[in-house]
Length: 373
Image 1 (cartoon, rainbow, N blue to C red):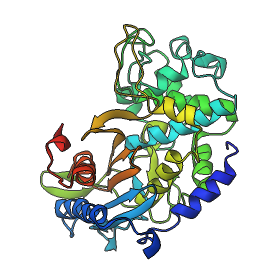
Image 2: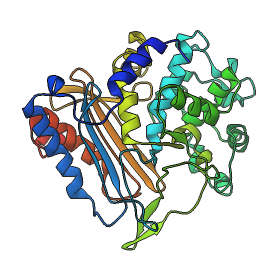
Image 3: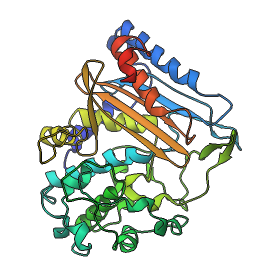
């Protein structure tokens, strides 16, 4: 998509395996010990007889510890693995943001032009915002994805055009750019603009992105599609583990409709942090919190949260979908990456686990005070 094939091939060679590196390249024992401490925290959190979790800890793409616990499918006794495709919810947003920034690098998209330039069919209140405002949750738009008018459409595939048609009477809640407010509908519009620029449905575009970068177990979560290694989706209700209702995730589009695996997301973040997906300027923009008109900084860049964590810079995101939870944290200057994915909707909290894993990597303690900040 962006002419970085040489970098990609080099990056994939580094990221291809999940085994411990050869002896000549083995990471220092203290760091390896910290990774084992971090991994143990995840194993302790999950019931091995219940819905599962996959986890991975790496440095500069090289896996220090990884594994899985519990089941990808309880009815068929299929064990969870680091290759299992799990609903990642809002981790779909940073992946989609990278796709948008690749279009910027190809001079096909200007982040600061009204998106009606690329999608003239949009209603006025949607077309007036910029892609930068959408990616950074500063559009001022209301979150139509929680509107009852959409609920009757969540069981069958739905296009971004149809979602926007249903939402066209929804007024903006604030002026564009005036305030940060996390709004899932922003990323439906991001997907729609990508579709108009490249002339393909978002689901096809993102599946091509995954194929191009060797992410074999990552997909748009189309309910009717046959997707190998897709985890079943579970929720805990009144103390019982139940199957999540069989809705079609297309109704949330780029806001949360993707599947991925721990191994694939390690490959993705490794390529991203090494320059294999975006150039330095684009990556800086993605990881730099946007500011409001009064100069006040937000904590969100273009598809990524950013913060100081245990004394270092960290970028991160969490995701929640029916029957899926996900969280990653990257300390880019140290090359450290932690991720937890689960097919249990509401327990345990993957965001807290990812932070505790990173705290262990940075301090040696999962319960370091900074882990709960």
